[in-house]
Image 1 (tube, rainbow, N blue to C red):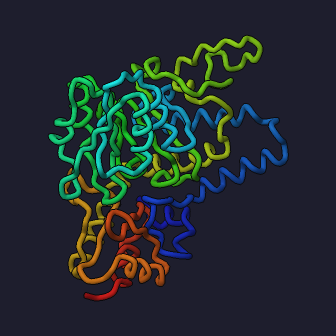
Image 2 (image 1 turned 90 degrees about the horizontal axis):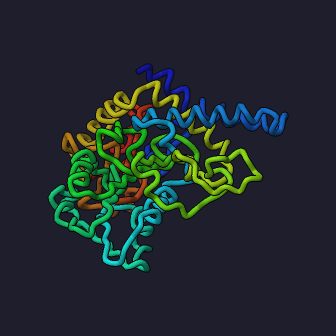
Image 3 (image 1 turned 90 degrees about the vertical axis):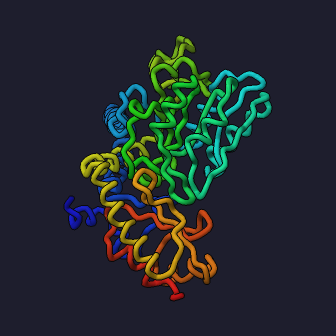
Length: 375
């Protein structure tokens, strides 16, 4: 990894110490250039080059598919993670008395769509975390003959706990349960293989670890789920014969394109495609290795300074998120101290959440401890 060259893609490093990718990531130079080139083309030629726009959409779809080891036809573009979760929640053919298994570490995006099913008589079952972790056996205990879905984040947003998605996927296959994964906190920092992990449906916005703008994300639908999910959004672009505007044939597209009911966020897709190009060029395994180095250095320094690390750090459970607090100082005081030094993190998970990315340096993450008050 040529870190000096990579850092040239991120001018943010010259203005602040940005360590908040679990909230909103930054935009690499090539994504900015892709947006500018698209805007210039649109401004100067209007839609004359529309076939080029469609080609860029196809390229981005292929890159997203490569990121999760899927086929391009299994990928749809969504405007955010919540939309993808709503496709899942509203697409299942629910019956009164069915249930869905969630947990108490989830971001609201992966809770409200399922709670909304109460009007159909669907029960929401919450797995209780233990020391910031979600034991596999606790998930299994919540599953019974009426469980239709287990929906879980690959990486939990508050403390960064990384769930064993492959083990949960195997459990769901054994029980005949649909497995839904919110991957917004893992795609871009952690390898994901939808086939190997037994994932049926996956969704993630691009604006965090994928280093893209808000308003564009991806939705993966396994082939066996394509016809099984009911469509609650249908439009001109979601039908099989999308180019025929006169037939009014509502037959859905045979691919995940059936979830794209109207015009695409073409500008956002150009940006996402460029960011995916960077991540694939570097390699997600290399990104993950870099994040292990950075977060291990930060965790060691925090411990030495007397701070409490709340994030699980075991080999199979760590992520690029490090959340900590102090036995002496209030979280708000810590947040103000960091902001006064132009160090950008967030207040989450009962403390301060720091989330660097692969372009950050060891010196940058250690600035966190240097800016904190002493105990």
